[in-house]
Image (cartoon, rainbow, N blue to C red; front, side):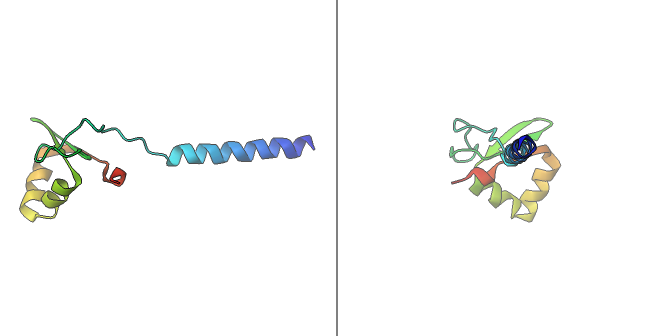
Length: 87
């Protein structure tokens, strides 16, 4: 009986850890705005000379354009893409 109870606690603990690991925290806030249109930013691009913030629309527009994607890749050393939080 005690062994069953301990097993149940262990299983719940594992499930809780999995849920915590799956949950991603949004880093960009509502106050972070797109540099192109002032909509909420969901992508932060860090480059050697500064940072750029983009809404989902403008980031998609850049990466879907071969020339734009090339320039962005030359500029960026880190990209924080949180477009999965767009509702």
